[in-house]
Length: 425
Ligand code: GDP
Ligand code: IMO
Ligand code: MG
View (cartoon, rainbow, N blue to C red):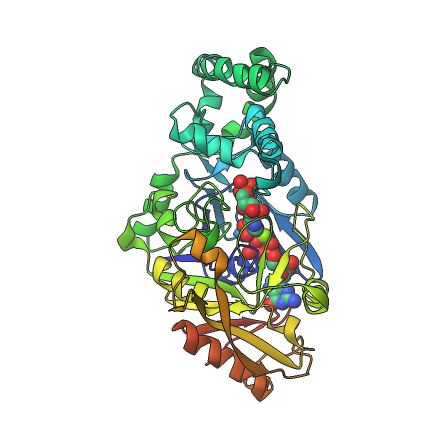
């Protein structure tokens, strides 16, 4: 299996970091292919927690070469800070390679992200305010600065001068904010950050293809998730990149035929941070219970996550959008205390039944979930190490999810720790 993709099947925070870390034991390279530090991937090793944003989750292993692919947007100050934090915890980060073609998040991107959200008022998307959308917008508008520009001060300054003229007009004339100074930005990026980032910059397309040619195993770590995808998600309540498996090719330089396994990560229920439709959303005591038991607060932003029942309509759509070959089900243990558990197996709207999400957002906002009710298991799963040990009701729940989404579940998470998982045979 030369290249495996890990992709979120819901609205993010499914446990991609934990699964990437688990699979990385048997891999050689781990590659982030999209997103930026809007991601928060939490891994718990021997009780110690690591919250990764930009650095691929395989970094904790000495045998892994972590790669930040061309599809990622990089805030160099955040990257350096993250590397320092990891180093302080004894992690060797020296093998990291950052694509020279990845785009840079600039100070005006963050400022514009904040201002646009404020401007949208009650229609705000609830972004992470990290500058992700504005950075990808500049990439598409072909005025972005790239990581490689850090090593060419003349080009960097020229590009910055051009783009900052327009940004300053927007900042001052539309938002009534102070203009930003090109010299200050150039000094920070070129004098302070570039010398430290430069040794990490490389031709990651050649790195991944050389690795494939040597028979090495590659793991592509998606950030965000299928329903935050710019094309396939619940637009406009999405991120600005393509987390779906197709994005693993464009964001790394691998070809579609290089991908051999695609593992979807699904929580045993669903969470979402930020605004947007959520058909199976739960509020009240049950919602509160899942938030508390699942510690459903953003890994880096600390924001409370919205919670709801497992949604097989979304899972089926994720299966076909990503060509899922298997699914890892996480956080089954969070449901331990429930008497009964609902699973959404379809939607209805206007007398029509939907097995896949309706493409029209106005319909999606109005759908009613159709639920099947499963009995709970009333037992603590967190210390189980074999699938066979699980109570029958928990096994039935897993089997039912496999059946309604049409994809086999190959890993089941029973706790946040690296060792807390079981494998159905
Ligand atoms: P990611 O963004 O997809 O990597 O997910 P996050 O790390 O943001 O959020 C997932 C959270 O669930 C983290 O706090 C993990 O430590 C935790 N987690 C992952 N798998 C399990 C599991 O099987 N059970 C429990 N209880 N927690 C888990
Ligand atoms: P991981 O990789 C959950 C959400 C934000 C917002 C929308 C757009 O940890 O699963 P953005 O800042 O990307 O422009 O925000 O996307 N969002 C995430 N939600 N997990 C994430 O990453 C997310 N990254 C972005 O909350 O609704
Ligand atoms: Mg997360």
